[in-house]
Amino acid sequence: MGSGYNYLPPLRTPYPFSSQHELFATFIDHPPSRHPQANMKNHPAINTNRAGVQQLQKAEMILATVSSIPEAKQIADVADAFRIYATKAKLGLSVQNHAASIAIKAKRKAGEMAAKLERKPGGRDKRTVLTGEGSSSPLQSAREDAKVSVATLDRWQTLAKQLTEEQIDIARDEATASEQELTTRSILKPNTHVANNSGENEWYTPTAYIEAARLVLGEIDLDPASCAVANRIVKASKFFTKEQDGLAQQWWGRVWMNPPYSQPLCGQFCEKLTAEFETPNVTGAIVLVNNATETVWFQAMAELAGAVCFPKGRIRFIDKDGNPRGAPLQGQAILYFGDDVCAFDAAFKSFGFVLKMVMCR
Image (cartoon, rainbow, N blue to C red; front, side):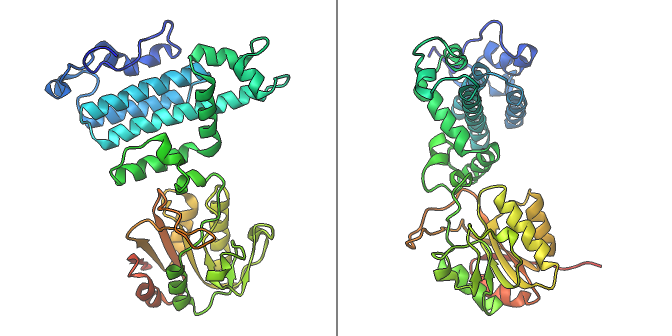
């Protein structure tokens, strides 16, 4: 490893990013001393948390330009080293997790590129390609250039299959807010909601929230994204299953919706709700969804909603047997569409802060 905190990997010549490597060159050329706190203010690469964040933002820009597995691997190495330095130098959990997220994104991108090489016309089966039996393949050559094992590349391909970059960002922000270190394992563990957003939609709503919704709406006429198991609790007069495709159906009456959490389905169901509520068909609605305030679909719903409840903690969804599946990484919001805002406030304020909308003319 060497002495001090000079954890960054040695440069290769020629470096694949040429002048863009100046981002980390200062750090490598001027490693901190054995006691980083003593010279942090004068270190030319990182002298404040803001400078560290700026370097990491530049690293993400570089990552967007990589075109080979070795390049992605080197970004991952440097980001991992930066994360170790941020920890030892006490730059703060935000900087540390930002570096970790870049390393995970880089590994994910390497896995994505590996999958594309594997699918090239004329390619052989995965075992032959990865183990190198027979003549060398593009994937085998890339793996050897990157100096990674078959098992490592397999893990990176799993990352590419299960996570989007947006989900990694969400996991980073949630880990930081919860004062936890971001790791690949923490994102991919079975009970992590974000890890399942790429394809797992069966997250059932706890009974307490359904009963509160029933107090506000009176009855639930329709659940447009449901199944027989979920409707044991929701007790909607009508529900649409995945096979019936609620997006293709007309909605009506008093609606409860906990949409699928994979994208683009989540956004599509929320867009459908806003469109239906602007017609006479839907008379009232309550929607439980991730508090993705940065998205177009959430903003569109918030503009129409009469009130929004932001729960005090992340909702522990349940499985088909009624058992908690663990808290998701992202927080939730419960939006109310209708005229009885006071009833919504009374029913949901025990769960968290209720924001009541006021129209300014």
